Image (cartoon, rainbow, N blue to C red; front, side):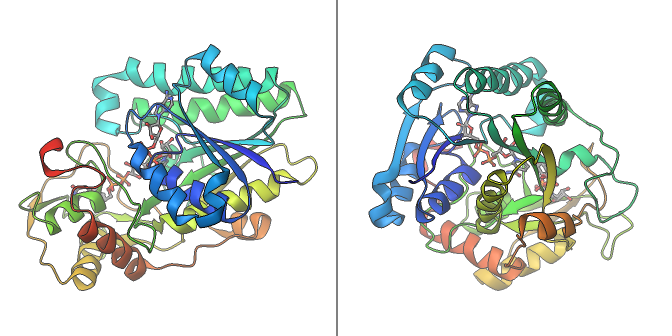
Length: 348
Ligand code: NAD
Ligand code: UFG
């Protein structure tokens, strides 16, 4: 019998790509999303891309903090596992509005965990982040590194990781996988789904993409005096389809006995600078990206990339795509959808 998977935040960037891989993998998939930072068009397109498997997707527009509504979703379907993406993720906004972030991310997660426990669903995959490594003393970052939080967003990830460990300590029936994503970029190779941030993008590649399609005049490079190959920040960019596949690998792991509460990095293990990423995108798109060099962005680390051995060994998963494919697919999505899922008059 097919597995039933609940995906919170499944209309979002990483969620929509993961839902597609789930459907193609034969999973029945129920999405819960309040559409605060997503469009239901993404799920319509996922359904189309999934072909015959599209019929196995159900969507509920529900806020995770609405416990009665979430109870109804669990009453309708017996879930084998939950993949929990739903949350707010803008670092700068979290500094301005910490209570919004604590309310949404923490209360949303606690409500979800309560409803899961009440319905006997004790298998969870959670979206954590490389942000929990702060400014790492060395690289690559292994899962055993000391953790810290530089802002309220990061603190919600740290808290939720701790909450998950406590839940498992209190009840060993739980199986929980905490996935620490590095920097997800790119889009599905079809160019039909991709990242569509609201407002001014915070992250590098969505910004570059908007410069390339003429929505913004230039990219501001935050910091040119880091001790890196070219002075700009170095990150571990990972293709969103590889990341999505990492969730399928995590689900397979959940079916093993006694896995406890385990954490895995999802990255490529390779560091790429801002200037290298821009050059790769220019090559893929044939577009020149005008640059304005600026000071460091407060809170940014210099170099962050993943140790990938644990995920390779225990999840039998590793990233397949490199930055050229990431940029190719990002451009394919951007050029086909210069205004994302919206139209020119509903963006800023
Ligand atoms: P996203 O904003 O595109 O997706 C999150 C989804 O959750 C959105 O569709 C939003 O509408 C929904 N949502 C938010 N709060 C909700 C609530 N209370 N109830 C129901 N739905 C709610 O973000 P994403 O990039 O796809 O990220 C998914 C997860 O991965 C997030 O938890 C994020 O913190 C984490 N993560 C993202 C990155 C990244 O760079 N994109 C890196 C590390 C970790
Ligand atoms: N950068 C620029 N200009 C921009 C945006 C970014 O130069 O307009 C630089 C940054 O300074 C950094 C690099 O590009 O050196 C990557 O920045 P991103 O904002 O794309 O990514 P971060 O690594 O800073 O953080 C992101 C998410 C975090 C998450 C982390 C790890 O914003 O929430 O990846 O997954 F925790």
